[in-house]
Image (cartoon, rainbow, N blue to C red; front, side, top):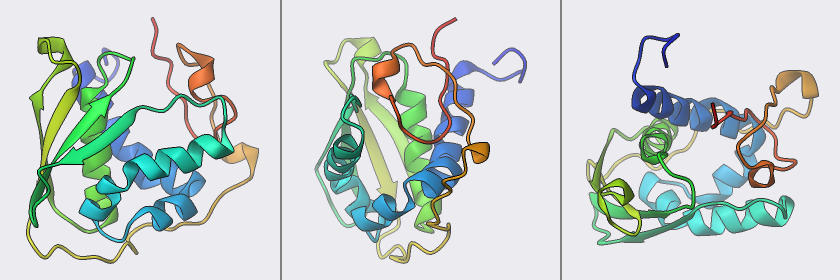
Length: 171
């Protein structure tokens, strides 16, 4: 964040959006498309997405998501993880999903582990009747290793063998 002149939260949020709009679309396009046709449908089905990814990468220890208070224009997204400080990344992921589905989205952290809650909770809002088409990003999978950057994470078991960009979370 020092090099970019931005806060760590801003960098994590931007990376979360980038991860959805570029990395995930290239590496997990088929899974993304199969998970939902709209933003709310995708968020509700997010646990199934992670279950399918975990079948492909058994060493993966994904976070856990659940939705509550679902309406035609909002929901609460619950996020459990053993990793700290990634709430801004989740905000970026949801914003990236909004772009993927052509849906303007507003995401606000309403309960935080950092403030003593047992997990993070986000209020996610969108306009009722948002577009259902997920045709804004390609779903082609790039298998060429030259298209990937790999680094080390704090816990290599989290991403063992998964495609895409990995971020060093320590240091």
